[in-house]
Amino acid sequence: MSHYHAVVWLDHSEAHVMHISPEDVEKSVIHTSRPHAHLHAKSGAVGSGRPAESKAYYHAVAESLTGAQEILVVGPAQAKLQLIKHMHAHHPKMAELVIGVESVDHPTDGQLIAYAHKYFIAKDQILS
Image (cartoon, rainbow, N blue to C red; front, side, top):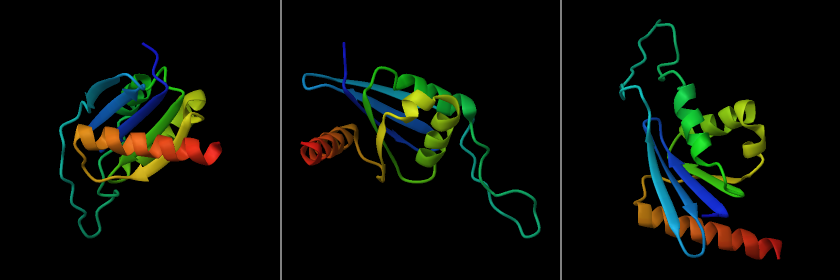
């Protein structure tokens, strides 16, 4: 099935990928392979206090977006920006398909689909 738009909501532990066409929505969830860890910065400690970037996780998310012609990337924190950075480094043609990066907290799948529809409709109206 051909899907024109895709939206991905992600944080550092999971990604919800939705391929959207006028007739259908295809959903998938990708989980990071590393357990979620709460890191705390200590005075004088070396490191950023953030978990290391998971290249395999971002690669799996990028691969799940294959086939989309326009991609919206959303999420509550820095993972969305790390995905964009990964795409520019490892999937440059796909990175060119990203039309927006937005901060969105933790929506349900239905809320995410509605948000994506609204975003893509507004973008299409601006371009016409």
